[in-house]
Length: 224
Length: 222
Image (cartoon, rainbow over all chains, first blue to last red; front, side, top):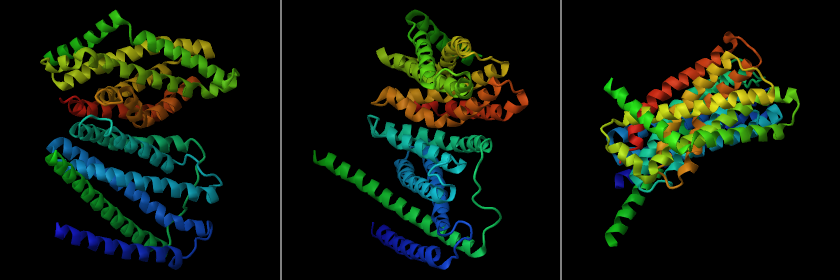
């Protein structure tokens, strides 16, 4: 128990330092992009959020497959916690996308391929979280959620393919032509690391809370 | 061979009970016609507008009709404890999946066989062979995931409310491909134009037939 606590505190410290450095790089160090101006700085938040949305749902998939296979509760705890953190990050991804789209494209929402795919992903994992409270007992809820997690993740590439094909038939906007400048790339990479640490921290915290919840429930049942 | 005989026995059971109760096909068909008529009022009558919204109209109608009939196919099993009976039968869970899937496919296709010509007549559209192929393949994809999710939804507290929440986000690629493909088919395009959409529908069908076949046993475990 104590070792876990020390590990979490260390992770918290590391994440805080990485975040402060990232914020410095994004808002002070990196040069302003020529065409889009200041708003382009949201890019350094937007892209890591997209990566985390995908990473989180990949772990939901792994947790779901392992749960159906091994039937150990820890896999369900991993999948469920990762889905919650993932939905939060996907929500932030959508919000930063909307904020970015308004000054650059002139509209809040354009059914851009990536944003649309993220929206569908978001709805899918909302379904993953919704199914659980609707089921009578916890094991069944975990099993049903695992099925949704597996089917949903397998669906993601087909969704992405269909949406990108659908978008190429309509006019679409270009975010970047050509490569990234090296200072911009460096900022993006640092930001990716910082956000991945943040995801890891939130995931371990959520798992710890889940364990406490289970323990509390067990104690309550003992008392009754 | 024996496996398929069992599968067909389950399908036949559903067809037989449908003939006696007329619960699914007839009511879903009436629902479909109502939706088409209501769409007509929603979008106004001009032929240009109809041409533009027809594929979307068609697939919204079929998607909701599909949700309705898929829900029904497992609610019937749940009442009177039929599902428990099915599970003690000497049939594997995969056999139950295929049997229910074929029955649901049959029901949805029967609805579409009637609804598609009516749709074409009411809106003055031409049904091409391409449109029929798209409809057939998309329906296979619908029931492939739909049967899995309706078996799951029926064991939750909210029952029929849960199916659309799970089903609709998963079939997004199918609906995109079906709408775009049907649009091309309705304006008389050749196979080459439609091919990429057909590929997406085909890939979806193949992947989710396999995945649903494999995970179905976890959906009706107890």
